[in-house]
Image (cartoon, rainbow, N blue to C red; front, side):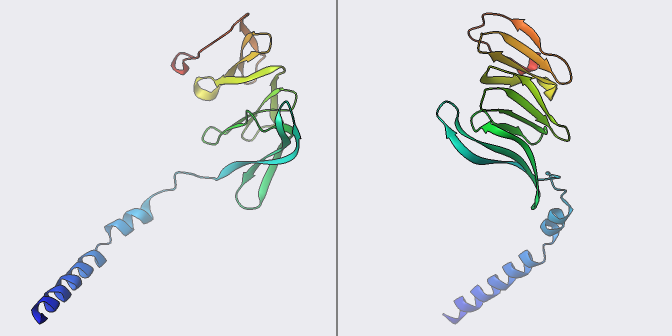
Length: 162
């Protein structure tokens, strides 16, 4: 039994020595750059419940620990989409008005009477959406919206072609 204990102790120390002396993984971890420069997330604070639109409240973008920026009030919790890697926040208010907030800019009114389905354009240069009259629109940031078609029941947008 003593030979087995000695052999076990020797193997344990060898294993400990080999793994303890390997600093390459420590160096690689220390040299890696963070993939996220700044942590941002959205915060929805519920004010009241609306039977058509669900919960209605205030929408914030929270940065870091203590900094938060109020984006809008009377926001419907349905249809809020945040694309942190693109710096784009898309949301609806209680009246189904569509807004877009780009990082570092003020919120931008896009259109009213919008259905909750929309598609971001390739390169995040704008948005495609449909209103309640079944009209299909394209809105490029910084420009007026452009009507693409009328009486559209169903549409599919292939991002690679936009």
